[in-house]
Structure formats: structure tokens, C-alpha cells
Length: 320
Length: 282
Image (cartoon, rainbow over all chains, first blue to last red; front, side, top):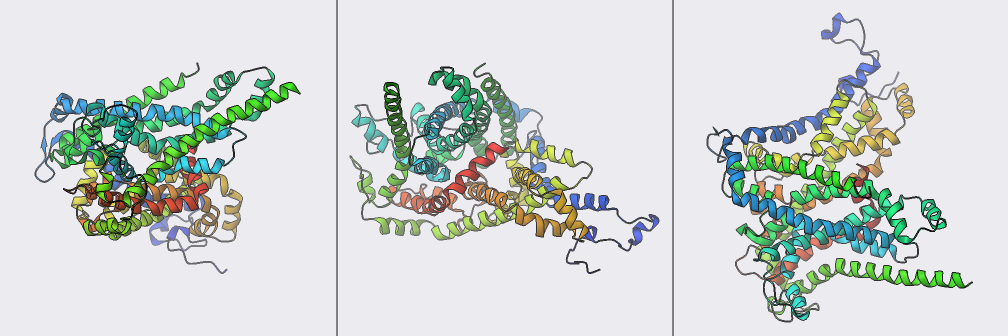
């Protein structure tokens, strides 16, 4: 019986296996079932060990750190709810939350609407060069966030030679201080988010549209349904699971916004564009206040759960 | 006859709108790349004037030389390549092995462990950021690419993805037959399962590689020394200079972006499918 013996794991050896001394009291070999179970545990263990160290432990430890005062080097000191009180009483935290939500809305909502329109256009039967359009629209997503923030940062320059101000002046508007004004900063950052993600969502919607059986439209046409009615009663309801998905993903992504404002605003953490994660980062690595940073992380976690639930709930009601 | 004619006319009219919308979208999508190139080839003074340069200039080489004198561009690209490649290989192995286990073996606590994993997928990565940083300092991995690679191998989505694919593409009969032939479980994984799940590997590899290549927050936290910078961190340092030379900055950004764009254009179908499919399927 020539058996392949390359495997190092004891559990995978085949019968008849000499029972190991430990197992002497049991007269049975490992059954096939037991062996499979051992393999099962063995094969997930490398992942779960890494996960325990670098995934699970940090998450749980955050909840511990949230109640400590700690500068990252010295001793930790238990301070109860003080960190949470500090963060929730800090006007800059509330500013950062407001900024995150505002940028989230102007960066995301148009993105999803235009995404649906573009997907609808791409899905029209008679379009040629479909793949050229698809590739062009998707290309921004392959660009790194840092690169996007740098390029748009130059376009949204405060000066008159910044591309956006050139366009504005040409259209007869005054130049905007994109990098320093309340709405300028938000619009600039929202534009970056919009540009990078709109194609991604378009392709997801396109996949959804292609999944709608053509018979439905044929039947509706026979019944004399207008294009608008077709969209309202076939496309939107059939696309709903996908819309919910994109709303869910976008909400989570928007609440974690970090790279664009950091690169666009530099090390100054300007209040016009500070986001919650930026606030967290500043607390930890600029103010060396790891306790309040952890408290911020926990608060953010709760906010994300609440906001994504609310958004999914309302998206679910579309068309009802 | 008459009604058919109006039908045809209608189609062409709506077609014009559709083409128009798509053209505008495509131009707006591509324009920043062109703009990047224009600035990467112009002198800072040409960029910072009214009206700014709109066509490529002659400073291609000079600008890039300035990049090289400011940051270790190739070193950072190499670091990014190392980090992204090793993490991706690690994820492919760990996730397919665990996914194989979840798909094909019965063991106690299996469902609990799996659901637990899915729940942690929902937790934002920022929650564990501070303690993760603490662990890395304790391990003395600051400025070490290991600090990115090893935690990067944790990918709950990867396991989910692999389990789905293996469940529906590796038939139980095949496993039983292999067992009767005396195949060990690991050989069933390595010689039978792996060849079958190559398409799932491709999808996961693209998602993971892209994610690691573009990752910013975590490398920013743990890579403090210039020799360990990934390209994203190095790029960000370009703009931190006292004198803002946009030609130089955009040159660095352009050349850091081009390789990935070329790979994307070559394999665009696979890229688009992989990057969106992942989201839709889960």
C-alpha cells in the first residue's frame, strides 16, 4: 500500500495508524470523521491565531483603553468615563462629525444618483464602444486615494491659476478659497470622493440592471407602460437590493473618510475639513492622547452602526 | 410603416442623449489623468500662471529628477510592491485553506466561528487602530514592512469568498474519490482544490493587491522612517515640502499611478469584474 507520506500533519495519516501512546486507553483509531474535524480546526487555525492577535484583541483592547488615560509610553491610569466626556464635550469633535456627514452627503448622494443614470445609459441596447466607456468610467477607482487627493488638491488651488478657479472665472464667478473656506474645503473633498467612486458604483448598478430579465420590460411595453413607468415599477424595485448595498457601503466608507482631507489640508488639521477619523488620528499621534483616541474610535463605531442602519432602513422604503 | 419610422427616430434621439451623457462622464473621468500628465511635464511657473498650461510641456525629465532628489521613489515603489505581493500571497493561502475547511469539513463550533468572522467584517478598522499600533511597538516592528504584511493577512472577506467558491465548485464526490485513493486532506486541498479555484484566487488577489497598494492610514501610523515608506506615504511627503513645486509633485504622482493604470488597462475586464463582484456577491 504505497501511501503518499509527504504530509507533515499527524492527523492526515491514514489507517492503519499506530495509536499514539497517549491514546492507548482508546482501542479505536481516529475515525474518518474525527480526522476531518481535526483537519478542519487545523486549517482555520493559522488565520484565527493571526486574527486573535491583530484583529480581535485590538478591538477588545480599545474598549479597555477608552477608559484609561495613556500617552503611549508611560503608565495607564483608569479615568472612568472621562475620555468619553472629554470627546463629547469637545466642539472640534462635533465639528468633525458634522464635516464627515456633510462631506458624506455631498460626496455620496449625487454619486449614487449619477451612478444609476450612467448604468442605465451603459445598459442601453444600441450603444457602441461600451467597453471603452466602461473602462474610462471605472479608471478613477484604480487610482490611489493619495494620488486623487494630490491632483485635485492642485486643481482646487486657492489662487486664480488653480484649474477650478480658472473655470469659475471663465464662467464669470469669483475665485473661491477652496483650501481655506468652510464650503470650499468640503466641496473640494466631496469632489475627490465623487470622482473616485462614481464609476465603481456605476458598474455595480450595471451588474444589477443586467440581472433584470428583459421579459419584464417586454411585458410592460405590451401593456403600454411608458419609459418612466418602466423605471419606476420595474427598474427601481428590481435594483433595490443593489441600491441598499451601495448605500450601506458608501455610508461606512464616508464615515471613515481620512486620506483625502489629510492630504488636501496637510498637517494643519484645519477645522473646515477635519473628519472623525482625522480627529482620532490627531488625538493619538499628534496629541499623544491614546485614551481619548480610543474613546473616539468607540464613538465612531456606534455612529457607523446607527447611521448605516438608518440609511438602509430609509433606502428600503424607496418605492413603497 | 409610419409608426416604425417614428420608433427609429426616437431611438436615435435617445441614443444621442445616451452617447452625450456617457461622453461627458468618460471625459470627466479621464481628464484628471491628462491634467496630471500636463503638470508633470511643465515647469512650476507655467502651472502657476493665468491661464495655466493646458498642453504637455518639456519638463518631463527635469520634474522627475526633482522627485528623485526629494524622495526615494523607486525604493518606495519597491516597498509597496513587496508589501502588496506578500500580503496577497499570504491572504490567498490562509483564506483558501480556511475557506476549504469551512466548506468541506464538519467540526464543532464551525458555524459560530464563521458567523463571528462575518460580524467582525462589519467593524470599522479604526476601532482597533490604537491597540494595533501598541502591539506593533511592543513587537518592535515600527518601520518594518512586517507591520503591514502580517496584520494585512487577516481578511474575513477572503475566507467568506473562498468558502462560497469552494462549496459550489469542488464537488464532494471528488473529495470522496480522492479519499478512497488514499489522499490526505492536505493533498486534497493542494492538488485538487487549489487548481479548481484559480478564478477565485484571481478575484481575491486583485482586490487585495489594490487595497494594499492604496492603503494609507495604517502605513502612515507604523512607517516612520523614510527607508520603509510605501509609495503612498512617500507621495504624501512630496507635498509637505516648504516650497510647493507642483510640476515635481505631479510628476511623482503621475509615475506612481501609471504602472497600475497600465495593468488595469491590460486586464480591464478581469479588474472590473473582480473589484465589483466582490461587493455584490457578499
